[in-house]
Length: 257
Ligand code: MG
Image 1 (cartoon, rainbow, N blue to C red):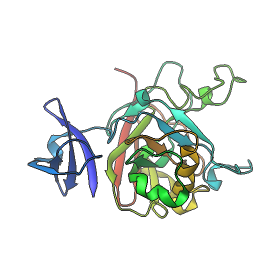
Image 2: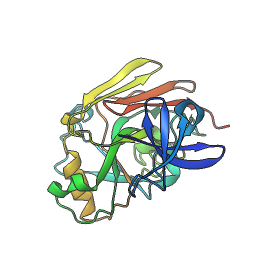
Image 3: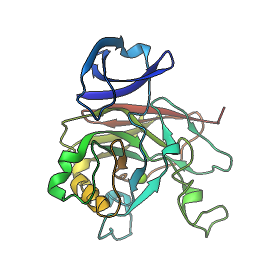
Image 4: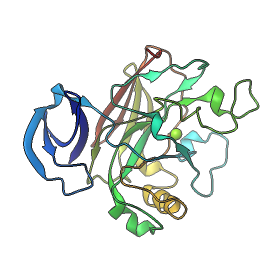
């Protein structure tokens, strides 16, 4: 089942995507998903980020192919991105003042379905609503520490600036999140390819680990990490992240309007 959050005529709604239609539901995705009986054409709505998370947990270094010569971490290494970094499907990734080395990071996002505090790995699946595509946008000049001209001690803007956390296009329930193909394209050319079976720390391990120290709330997102080596983007580029069974998240890169 594909769960979409969308606006039409300035009103925000939640619904179930069925072919080229969305069946509206009452309330949000954390209730009983009861249908209102209204439906609307997918082409007539503005898709929104599927949730408004209280926080986003990103995972650093979670594919061997991304680690280069660096030894893999021996435990998960999460870091935070703020809700203000959320970007909707189709929204413009902003080339902010000072950007010089702005990279895509195609990832699978896991969306939390109910409050999750100190859960075991075996329990995690009961707390996951579903998965979707994510793009952990990264300004490497800001990210790479305070040793460079314009580097920062923390990743507050390098990975947390406005528009740096697109995710969507909707949440898909019922997928085996341990075995999904994940592809990134820039201007139609494939630039990343992996399978989530290659995650060093899988979803159950990540969420159990995080939940020992930080309560995850319904709608919170865990961006599970990126694969391979990434490249700089340019203003005008179109990024796409495609997760098997979910769909395609497409966002252009451009200067702020
Ligand atoms: Mg990342």
